[in-house]
Structure formats: C-alpha cells, structure tokens
Length: 317
Ligand code: 13P
Ligand code: SF4
Image 1 (cartoon, rainbow, N blue to C red):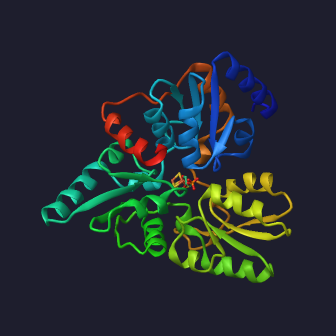
Image 2 (image 1 turned 30 degrees about the horizontal axis):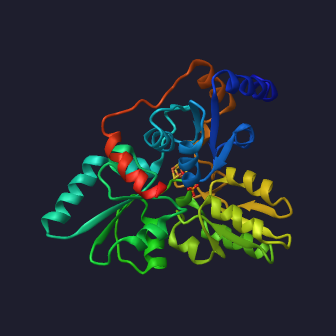
C-alpha cells in the first residue's frame, strides 16, 4: 500500500522532471482527475492533446483516447497508465468486419458515408469518413449531404438518438457500451419517485428506454455545463459512469448527485456497479509508474496516417 498523498507528490515532481502533462477523462478516479493538468470529455481532451506544449502526455483514460492523442500529436510521447484499458464499444467493431459491411453496401450500389464514434480503434477510424464524439456528433451528421446514406458505428444507442435529433436515417452497427447498457429503468423510476423534484441526466450511450424518461441528455461535458447552469439546489439522478459524479460535485457542489443503479446481467440483481472496468484500470500508482519508466507508450503505426486525416477533419476543423 502506498499513501495517495505521497504518490501525488511524487507525480508532481515527475511531471516537472519529464516535461509531462496529465490528461484525464471524467470517468477515471477522482484522485487522478485532481492531479491532472487537463480533464474533459473525449472531444476536449483530443483537442488539448494538440494544443498543449509539453513533450510528453500521460493519457489517463482508455486505449482509443491515447491512440487518438498520438495520432493528432505524433511528435509527442503519449504514455498510458495501462494499455489494457479498452472499451466494449471499440471492441464490438473490428476493422475487417466494417470493411466487409462497407463493401457489401457499395456492391449494392449505395452511396454511403461511414461515421464512427471516437470510441473505435485507429484501424476502424482509417476506414471512416467522419469521427464524432458526444460533443460534436449532431453538428457533423448535419453536415453530411442528404443524398448520402450514413453507416454509423459502433454505438447503436447513440446512433438511434442521433437519428431522432437530426431526422436522418442511419444504418446502425449493433454495438453498445457495457456501462450504459445496464441501467435499470425500474430502479431509476423508483429513485425518481422516492426523490420528489429530482432531475434525470443521461448520457446518449444509454438505451432508448432510459433516454425517453430523462430530463436532460448529453455527453459528459454537456452534463457538467447543464448542472452548472441550474441555480436552485437540485437532486440529480445520474445515468452515466459513476466517476462522473466527481466533476459534477466540483463544478456545482450545491446539488445532490445520486448514481442510477444497474442490473447485473448474470443474476438480474440490482448493483451499484456503474463503473467502467476499463477506466478503473487507471490508478495513481500506474500514473506514477508510467511517468517514472516512460512506458507503456502508444507507438506510431503506419495506418495512423489515414486515421489522422479523418480525425483532423472531424475534430479540429
Ligand atoms: P464523452 O466524455 O465524450 O461524453 O464520452 C463518454 C465515454 O463513454 C467515454 O468512454
Ligand atoms: Fe467504453 Fe463504455 Fe467504458 Fe466509455 S464507459 S470506455 S464507452 S466501455
């Protein structure tokens, strides 16, 4: 066991020695968010990776995030506390399967543009026309000419939600986020009833039955801005990864935040397990270790070149 305060001191020292900045997603442990130089949603962190001037980035998040940072900022060393931190969405869409689907649609003579959620591997990104995050998805979808069909990968729930808000039809890939998929509608409605006046905020990765009864739908940064805009102290039922409560409490401590419970698929029982196991692989020890040893590192791959073009066009322009 190492004292978190000692670890934090050591990390501060190493950041200076190694000319490094720490970027942390809102879903990693609060203590990592607290020592990070930049926190944010997927969109902001990808942009921060480009604009910051240090020679090294420690990306505390999941693999596709570190990979995107490297692709957008190849001259920087991008370290990750744990390279095994993956994502169920990215996993659900493999490049050869996507290629086969695109070939099939094109062989039918269909004009398609492929839009990928940023939660995908670089190999998948390199096959796509656009990359979206929860923060810019609507705007990008609205830019696509009406005579083009849209193939949206890999999140079926975000895709369905985008169809609803943009009025565009889409062909949806059958992927989903293992965390947002498990919220229990019944328990959420019970919590709403037990907390009169409470407001449900949900991430668009949630299934339709959750979004239908939510009062506010938005990605992590939009959620933060929303609670900050509500003056009256309010009870919020939060339908997203539970580490998100940390930045919400920080930006608007006047409110109360109640995590929405999930349902264990194996037993059908309610659980308080809305923690992404991949995000949870990030620990203060691993942040310290990767800074100290300069690894693990995201290493440049040839196919990053193609992914770079689509990422820049989608996120930086
Ligand atoms: P955003 O922070 O961009 O809303 O993404 C949520 C997410 O699931 C990241 O894995
Ligand atoms: Fe992927 Fe879901 Fe975890 Fe985000 S919360 S990294 S979408 S599995």
